[in-house]
Amino acid sequence: MDSIDAHIALDRSELEKARNEGDKPKAAHLEAELKDLETYKAHHPGESKDPTPMEVYCDLNPEAPGCLVYDD
Image 1: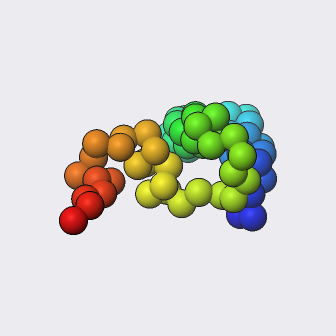
Image 2: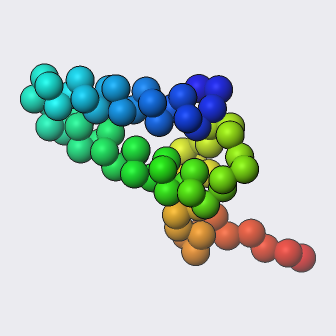
């Protein structure tokens, strides 16, 4: 994806498709991903690039061991 807005739009369309097909596991996954992307976007209003899954995870879980940054 080029932008977070394009990623959100794609997830919304895929979510609608999954719901129409009755694919509950896929719909649940897309709902969670969409929620996380929208939260990330709210935290970074001036940023338009599509974040990596790790960027989203660390934004939502800054205290996670894989997200900690140490200054020496």
